Image (tube, rainbow over all chains, first blue to last red; front, side, top):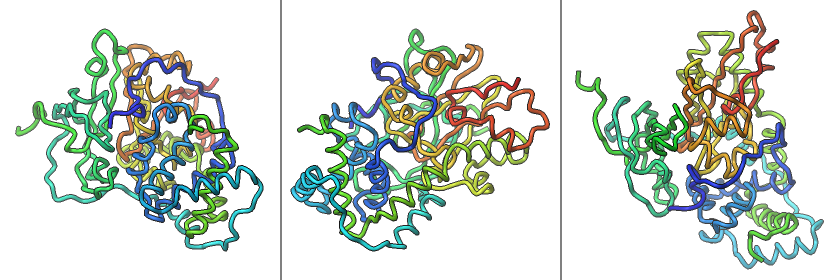
Length: 235
Length: 199
């Protein structure tokens, strides 16, 4: 979907404010939200790609004016409600209760060692997104390719600033879960993944690009089409 | 009340409401929050990336492995995990400088850098870093890169997690890996700051 979250090349947002140091969390509730992402994944509410899409579906004004972990909270609510894991009226009722009684206790519960095991496994080993595919590898390093000039609906990683632009394949990365499928809850549908390099002049025009700059962008096979093969190909 | 106007108290109440529901569903415990947060507040951070960089500076064979397969080489040092399953390390040279960004969300190599700083996740950096990287580095980060040096910005659009192997500064010959690691900052591995020269 074309949305405000797709920020590459947007102008007028002002200077970057980068303090020399900052803590990982500013508010206690951010710690809870950070952990809830795992809870929702364990509960089958979303995978990583559909989690991202839940953020993309936020009201655009709210997206730009709210903090990072509020984005996460929005995605939890979106998927939890859409998929029937939580009742929105119950969520509202409890929210009002905790607003009126901020110090009220959480439900009494026992520790669950299996949840700690998942936390430790994920933070140590992660969850790879690489998946095998039988499909042939369609492009080679050095191939000149054009990013498809399409505007998909739903979740995609095909950012607007690269659409229709011509670049060169600089690496083949293996085959991976395809966000345009997984992010729309349609299964993993793995595809080959490449990194392409796009010159600044191609992206922004000769007169507007910073001199001698380029961007690289990772593209799944369906995102690109061949312009011409690598000059070394077939020799 | 629209979401945009929510106060910190309102958000905290909303989070607590959802927290209570997830606890009842058996998907969350307060112990789980304490453990997960402790890992990213106290265990995983840029000191781990600095360790890998220092080793690469001191050991050419390790550097070769790090550039060949960032995930496998970091695993040798016991470094790895979520948001670093597929790491690719970018070597800065006199000719080319690298920097990372995620224009679509906030992808960042957690196992070597920890959780991203706010500015990395905010719209200003994500919008401008691809459009005008030389200008952003100079004006917003005070990092002047001469026009003779090419800049490559790596937009993390997939699950590949990129990060930068900065250049080893002169004057550090014979330093131990621990001493070298002390020079390596988070920002130098994002690509928005140089390694400070050794006097």
